[in-house]
Length: 182
Image (cartoon, rainbow, N blue to C red; front, top):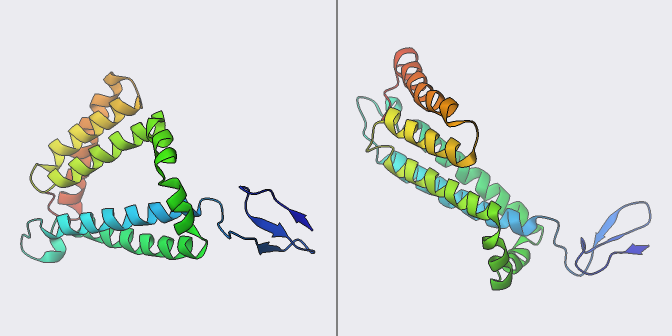
C-alpha cells in the first residue's frame, strides 16, 4: 500500500487500485469549488433580483427580464449542486485554507486575479445598468471595454464587433422572436 505525503491528495491507495480517504478527505479543487458555488449562488440571486425588477410590457413572459431571470435560477441551481458536492468532498476546510490571509495576499497579487476582478466588475456594472440603459448602447460599451482590456483583437477590429453584435442581437430578438429588449 502506497501512502502520499501530507499536502498531497490525502488519500491512500488500497490493493486493487481503489482509494480510501486519508486523515483529511479533501479532494483537489474542493475548496475552490466550495467558494465558486457560493459566488454562483450570490450572482444568480443578483441576476434574479435585477431581472425581476425590469419593466414588464404586456405579458411577463415577453419581458426583457425573463432570460436573465432564468439565467439567475440556473446559476443558483448549479451553485447549490456544486456547494453540496464540494462540501461532501471536504471543501469547507480547504476553503478556509484558501481564504486565509497569507494565501489571499498571494492570490490577490497575481495578475490573473486582478484581471478576473476587472472582468467581474464590468459584468456587475453591465447587469446593474441593463434595465436603465439601452441594451444596444450598454452592450456596445461592455464589449468594447472587455475586448480592449483582454486584448482580444486590435482596436480597429474590436469597434465593428462591439457595434454590430449588439445591433444584430437586438434585431434578432425583437424582429424574429418578438421579445422586446431593455
